[in-house]
Image (cartoon, rainbow, N blue to C red; front, top):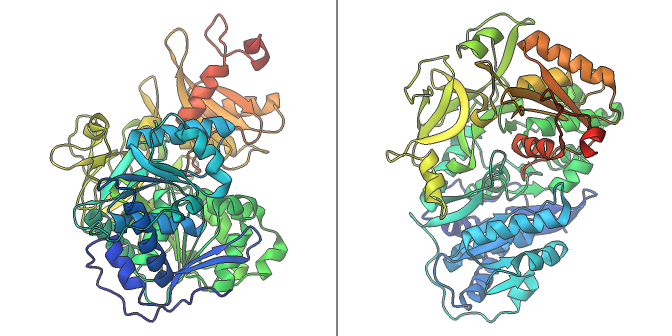
Length: 578
């Protein structure tokens, strides 16, 4: 078995496709495609675009034979395997809407996962559902109370008879897919993207954000049910007829060095990750690993997802410098599923740009005043210029636009913005106004046309009129000896007496009293507020489907297991249980 070549043999298309099916038709004229690697880093499946097109068309005829109406939803458990691509593009050809669903069982086990995908399928009104063999038992349990035309494995669908004729594929203003949000602040909602809205975003990502050329090769471990994995590493390479190499998220979590090996071996040029992924790699590297890889081909190392922690990127670039990694390859970006994927990109080949501001001023007044590095300075990553098709503005709590370097809610408008949350008018109205302005739910400030993201608005902690960003509390806790990066979360709860209380939850093998004391002292010293520190076992903190820590779920878990003393303070766990 041989991976698809980097050079497709096709000239770069101008991107004026009618829909995703049209893009696949063009890519199928070349030699490139998708490549899948197993948990040991061995090539286990190859899917050239020409084979994908033939297979998707055959499957589309079988789906059409079910007699379902146009725009019927096809739920796909989006494991990292070639069957996902077959079903996703078969839906395009059949006039159905693909709905990628999570393929990760988080804390809470199988029952929580079954309930999660059942709610998603019910909310989108799925007509059929498919899962890989390892998930089909869970899928069958999830669909028991639902009325689906068919649910099963790819083999069950391949056994269907083919219809003689196919309808016209999805195109133009018709839907492209439903993308469920990660659910970091509330239950996931199905983002409905039109074909042309998506194609606009793909064009700007490929041409501006990544500046992709014929000789680029992509590498990814990101899940297909998340916008960065689906749009960035399934649809962008298709749009430009480029080859891409995949590891599963599970493989990356267990053996993150395989990501580096794949880039090194296949001369990958573009790959992306949340900052936490780079941090995990740096933490797992051994000195001997630095001589195993040649990362000099890696020209675009995208980094996004919430506020970017520059410390993790610095550790990564220092650890991989002997392997030829150039820190100028880092490309900071900002985006969300409600816009397909991308809203802003930093320039390629410039590296991370830090904006150092006065911490006290930005917290108390919202003004991002530049200052020298020091104890009272806050380092924030510039996420680059907003893509040309967008209008954007920063607004205060009253909805009035504010000027440069003043924090507020990030609002965007443009042709890549979603049409709404599927079958959820109320949720759509909350974020999308009649003039097409999308409230991203993020807080940040502008520097000309550049964006700096500071926090999620729903995560901001307010105590005595003071705004505290949870990331700053988490970084304080992680500065203590023995606390690893990415193992803390901070949020606000209300005490029985009605007062707000800052809570910092920390994963640690040992509930050391001095650790709690040190964190409380740091929080009081830096922010002037008391806090409660909750020490929990490793791998306790809940994460969203995209791997981000979910402060909302962590808060709910804390309240569920916490009792209160007569003065309104949390009891130790053993007293609460009693």
